[in-house]
Length: 378
Image (cartoon, rainbow, N blue to C red; front, side):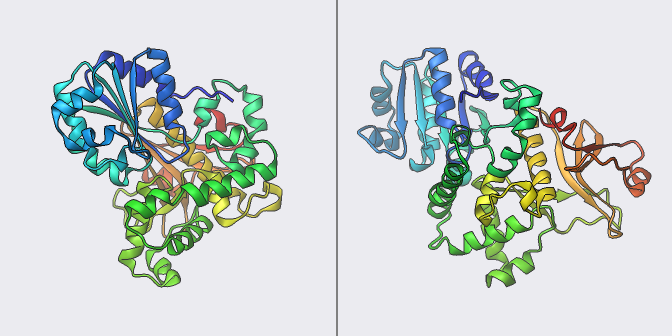
């Protein structure tokens, strides 16, 4: 199934019209290499392809940071594509040399984890590259090839099995379950364990399972540390690693310093609901599970995030809760405007919390359900 990626025209434009390079971050298996190959096919650049997972004769030249050796390596090429760049020592310094001294060479770099790639790239290449995040397939992207009816028909499948590109071409429930099991076991922890300098994945797996059961709820680091028999600082480090490797993301509490607003604990969600369900070993459909509302919340949050980031919109997302129990699933702040959202899988109509309208009278409020979700995410 060929699904056009929203970043495609942006990256093509960047490579063709500027002297800057392009860096694409994202988890393994989200389609970074496929996207870059499509970019290069459409632009027609003669390209040198280097894969950090597969060291070859080129490796010495790239790590030498010797301009003469690098020039020999890229001579005759119009573009350089460095895939899995996080595996090449001090890659940022080598790329800086290329951008500073070979301005006509188009440069595009991908990395499966920001754990190492960001630290090696961000500082040397400040102002020299455009950076993007590539996510699993978004509803925003699917809306280009599916009708509204088709999207709604496939909704429950997306909630259960997620949106990694390959899942769209895997047929049958058993095959999809096998793919997700392989994804979580073979790829999810690979860079995390290597670049996070972790000796054993057991505690990370246990932590992920605890987080998976708690999506939609505020997470206590103290409780997590007790359950895992780890120090609070170790749990915080693991959470940082999971977030930096695009497995989970945090949602902070919204506050304008009202004493009754709850902000001390974050909510934690998964970048992909299929991965979340595979972590807890539950790939049942909605009628056979009791966490449909939580899945719906996670799904809408990440799909909204994908849409806004691909649109290049500056915005911030939060949840909102008072000590009295009044709450909103999401607060979006954009251009000084506040909008509160409540997510309901059913079509039941509800009113905004009275305290929300009292404290933020100029804000807006909307309920997102199965009838109107497409305009929210697509």
